[in-house]
Image (cartoon, rainbow over all chains, first blue to last red; front, side, top):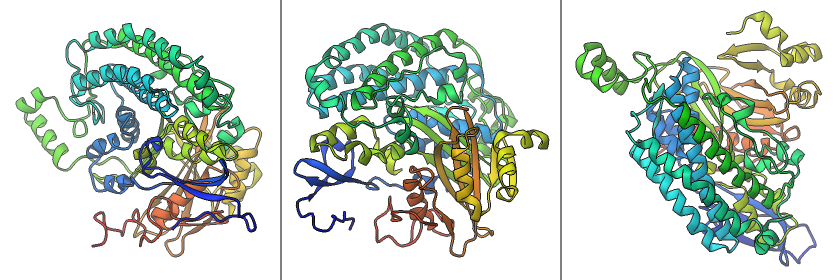
Length: 398
Length: 159
């Protein structure tokens, strides 16, 4: 059993077990709290309740078969995980992805970011008592889920990005649906802001709560909106561009407050910036052109080719029965997932199965900062602080 | 792949070799990623140097990734992925460990974020980190037997 040792002689503190079954923990997070009255003296996150051994499972699969596993790591942003893993394997293989596929990837991962932030705003506000925001946010998220379903065939476990490109040709009319969403979305963000940004209760619950300095945040490895809320303008899309992000014009919102309110402002502004990127990607993405790179034996041939040419048939058969073997080596690819720096480490030993797949989950690392945020504050602030770091337990525990 | 001359001119390689030639055992470049192999006894000093040197400033430890090369020796490799946020640079430190009693000095004093990464490596690989403030299992229950991400641990688990 995990225990917190109380300092000798201080009999006035008590231990409170929060979770793993608690609505505000967004899954199965357990936090051991040592309380002095209502003040948190010490907090200790206890994790692992959702550990499914994804990294071990990946070692028993071929490279392509790992993609569906990555959906399940961060189930609120499956496309970001698909992208991180595919980019890592493409780097290992030295594959160049066609422009059209890159732009579609950017477009869809930015929609994923919006969708993930919508869930975050909604649930975080619900945790703090503003229930109506949740309904507003899920209204827009539903539209996004429908777009994901339209494009990939699945609402959540998309597995749409494949090694070397995309799984399917995007269906006709998909851009019109994205366009419709973009036309209504800015005023919808305004609606959430009207409900929260100047709301006195919201300000009282978030401003000055869970403050973390830039130095502490960097030392603890915090990344993503949580880091940018502390005034550090670090965004992987800008610092280490991938998948043609360097061709897009967008700002990295930064707030210097370091509190829950600053992180809220960062995420809201990020939704606007993501919408801006989506708009640019819509203009850039050509309506015709290859969606997968030409790499016989690695990237499956088109359906047409598989049915009509003997080479196509052989390659198709080989890829789906035995996979492909990248050269021995190790790569580490980072992307900016909605929660922060998502790193994927892939090591090949020259066989058709990865020797090691490791996911640097931003939630896992950000959660480590929780004690820093809550210690010395009131019990009620713990709920605000868990919400503000935007954890997905599937990703924390993997 | 970068040639040898280019590698020598890289800031991290150059500074680290100037500081202590013994601290870098090998320099590897693969797919434009730089890897410095560090002998185990130099790890903590080299880490502190890379973090605090005003020209390098590798203040951000992104991840610690253990790899098991069973049945080869040295069996374990630890990969420390560092980033410098200001210079927009990345480097990977690699430490090789034998399969018999794998242990390495903890870098929690250099990067506090290493705390959970090292606990995870301990939990899943059984690598010990000397000087870690709280080396316990993190993902698995405390009474779990074995280290699941080792190659000699079956994927289906022991039945």
